[in-house]
Amino acid sequence: MKQKILGQLRSGKSLYGKDGAFAPLLKSFLDTEERFSGN
Image 1 (cartoon, one colour):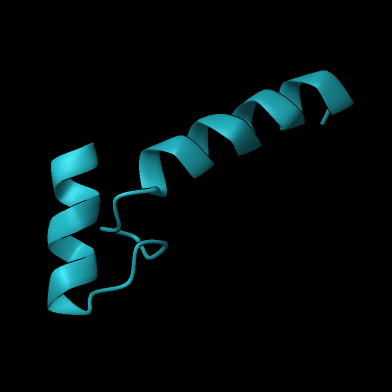
Image 2 (image 1 turned 90 degrees about the vertical axis):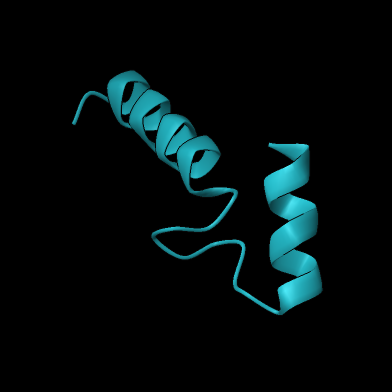
């Protein structure tokens, strides 16, 4: 993950988009939050 983040930062790509380095982390966080909130 670290290499993907560094590569995207250097190339100017978004880290948060669909293909961004943080996408799997954000998806996991949101899925967990959804389970705990009961939705």
